[in-house]
Amino acid sequence: MKQFFVAQDPTSWEYDELAHAGPEHLDPAYVAAHDAKSPTDWSEEIAELLRVGVGATSTVVDLGAGTGAFARSIAPHVARVVAVDVSEAMVAAMRLGGVEAVRAGFLSYEHEGDPPDAVTTRNALHHLPDFWKVMALERIARLLRPGGVLLLQDIVYSFEPADASTAFAIWLASAPTDSSKGWTAEQLAEHAREEYSTFTWLLEPMLERAGFEIRTRRPSQNAIYAAYTCIRR
Image (cartoon, rainbow, N blue to C red; front, top):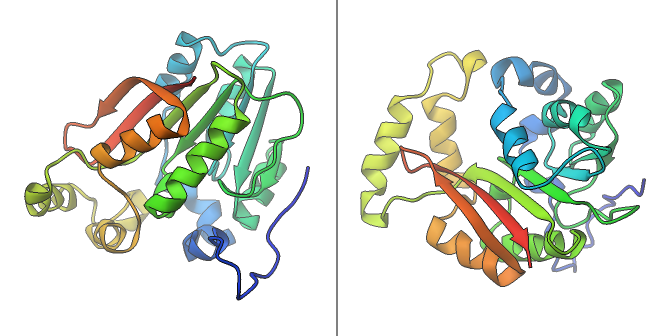
């Protein structure tokens, strides 16, 4: 697999995904504790992919794969899974677990082999500002075969801008106080201040402009999270 990430040219206008990945994701100690802190039941995601035709002969690419938990979960259902992450520590952990892993990001991954049938990404696109989200989504569309599936899940706000204070107050109040059991209120507030989560009414036109048809949209009850199933036109 091709590897990326050389020192950034100071005259380059391109976005440095590694520099904005979040220092915790580059820390082997954080990686080792990640799955215990954020256990995930992937059954809904797997069922959704199977529902739209992903199956035994399919190739799936997971962008922002983290420790590879999703890749390991979907692997029994498909022919090939490629897990992609910018973090060297995450990629090392995935390879130790037997996952086909590539160190790259939304803006640098180059697929080898037949075009994938599906691309998945969960809680990773928010690392990119909106300009670069569009660039990433267009790259994903070019990567997929025609009719291929994008399963996108992330912190995406469906509340009205005037309701932000109330929405964030409710979100922060629901957070655990023990950071080993999830993201604390302080960490969620840091996300709101420093990450690039956007509104549904901004993200959805990006998806459509990039060449996707949104088949399903599933905003969370607290208006903080959203999941999309999209088909490449």
